[in-house]
Length: 315
Length: 259
Image 1: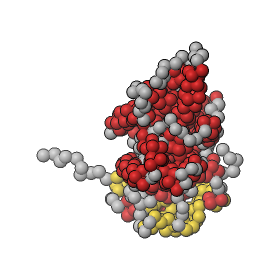
Image 2 (image 1 turned 180 degrees about the horizontal axis):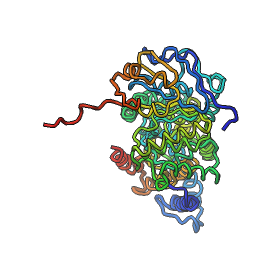
Image 3 (image 1 turned 135 degrees about the vertical axis):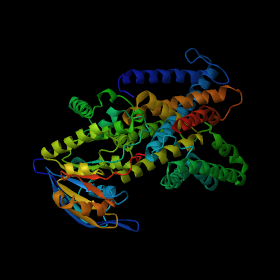
């Protein structure tokens, strides 16, 4: 991927972002024109329901894309991402466990999600040592296991929390417990963190030995990536549950358009992931309105074909 | 390049991986201007030795000294300023281009005009100019190997550790690379290279390290070690001594016999 025309490409991405924001404001059970809504009711729907929800979708999507990009470099596998590796699942288990123990504590839930994500990554990294083929296999089996654990927890949880926990299985942006301003802050923080590490991440693309020979402290970088990817996954899961394939589709697409160097592809992924989840969520609440589809259904319908295509291309 | 001649040295180096002892008590001293060739059978521990010399593999006992200072006293990035390591070609999985791969090899993070000129010069030296913007995954093995050699050229390291630099190269580029190695050594660099071709080793080595694979190692001047009995023993095959004194692998008897 050449580096010419990069400003124009970023301009294009920002234009798509602006259009997506307008579309997400307009779409839903009732189509609204964000520029001409004067009705108090319409104003409320636009700015108190749809606007915070689209910001949640944007930040969660961006965090998932960043986490996916980090996992891919860290594990040297372009098919890795939080959902496929079972890390989103283990984060959800952690969150549900804390929800069962401390039903009123959102902080406890976030902490549980972080711990769950870190444990999930630890297990996956252990299997990554056995070879690239084992990695995805282990991830898929673990993901199935974590869903089973969540199903078990659901059966044991008191009825009142059941709906909330159910949402985690396929993603739900309607009932985020994380304040939007905090999500925006964490999104920016994650991106800044990725930019600081971008040169080391680039060198890790060459494999661990080459990166180390070029002066990268591999052990330190691994710990930082582990922490960053766990945090990003945990925040995304706490806010919106387990949403698959954003972390796969977006980094791949952004590498095609912006190249593999992280100082370009990470910001593009943080925005692109946000755009994709915003659009997916608009679809989720429009196609069978007034009912809503879980947003994970839409991302899976986009992501699974892309995953299979990449798998085909690799073989 | 630093004003003082670069040195790399091993003192009583012992290397064990798992249960196996690869290197038992290696001593050598290499300084700028000279080339050391490592010879030995597959799996004997030559690549492990290079990793240990570059600080990427912990030594079991003994020590490596870089410019008279123990390697353990350096940080990873300080080592990278002095030592350039060439190993297996990196994966093509993430779509890096040739030019980007070379950018990653450069020490400064800035993509200045000087850096760009350096990359162009390295590409030109390895006949890669038409491939500069191509993705690594689309290149042949030999072309990818040449990208790795170009990646060495863009770095300003006074010491090179090369793990089979001629792998996959066509004959023309193998010959050209041996000449570049000698030019670099004449310019003051210290070079260690793992090679498999005894003819190339004889052509270029000033000193030799022999790795037997059972813990035994020998090091010394090429003239003392590149002789038939010693090489037959370490390489486990009988070499043929040509009239001009050159040793080559013996392929006689592999042609279809005349009927």
